[in-house]
Length: 452
Image 1 (spheres, one colour):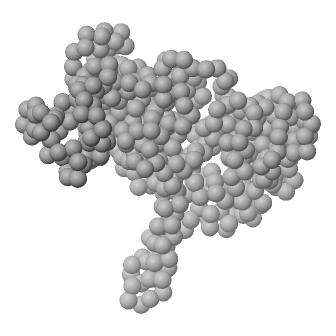
Image 2 (image 1 turned 90 degrees about the vertical axis):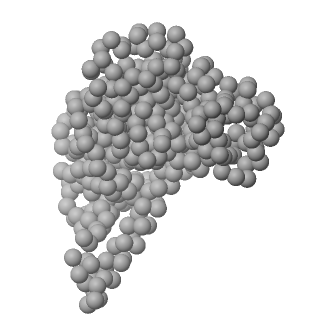
Image 3 (image 1 turned 135 degrees about the horizontal axis):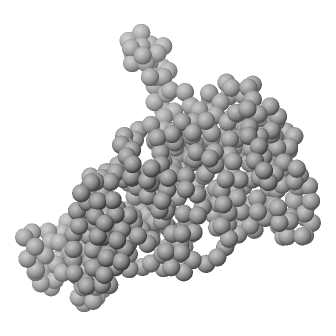
């Protein structure tokens, strides 16, 4: 199959109005005519985004897993990933490509400063930028930074995974200045990834979008639970995968991966021979029999011929809950004994697994359909006993870990996140090489059949 990028297709369509638009917002600075009017909301922009549907949350500190989950769910009940996501990303990419051809949006100087009620030299430029992306109403073209602009900045921040403060922070300014062609590339890469995912959507399923560091529990096409998650570090990225959740483990033990035992555990033991005892860890042979840590080679020079297992308890790295989801990467979702990390905006701190904020609530949802006795109170009570317990799900729940740095939800809100693992560029480069190969093959008599 010959490959044509969305950008190329968008360039071909540049002469046509963008999704029902006839004006040139990049050139005029005026908002395009909305496809469907929305009272007291920003006009629908040429790029098919409608951030008016996004509720910009107030900057209230979330002190508990429950309050953080509630605040996350309040942002939107629209799933990041459903059966229509690929088609919507394609529509957004075409529209953004058209906007790029028309000139895109302006760049705001990096030294620009904005404060409510204070007239600044770049206020109108910021307004124009927010109008073009649909975050600010079309008639708000001039004036100092005011409450209307602050609310528009909040809408922009929510769509880009930033703290919705309403102030133009350095991270917000950096996101504002990402070019339209770069956004097109993000949409292209996200679309290509979805086309390679084979996922069976059911009435209930779970999605973890790695760049967004959020998990969603979807039921009847609506997000009924949303949780902050901590995923892999940049040097140890979490994988993309599809699997099925098979059960919930309360008060789990943690079998340390051999790679961690070889590097991190060995390094700790070389410095402090009491480390394993302090961390409530046992060393086991191939038959799960305990062995003396003093008899082990902790040089880290060889692959371990032993297993390190951490006992269940408050000290356990998996916390009080583990969600089983067998997969080739041996990763899973779990609790943590470092819950303070969920308060951070940057949540790429794990070795590949996904730590879930308010995971007990997710466990209760997973068990609720067929096992009504396992409500949240029952789960809390079982954990309090300290007893290790494995609960199999009568009906497995599909789960997908996806890598979307750009997507559009059903309410036409376009979302962007940073390409934290640098996978967008790698994918697009590989696609370009493949396209070049097929283009050459089509012109060669011996390989023309490959391009068919």
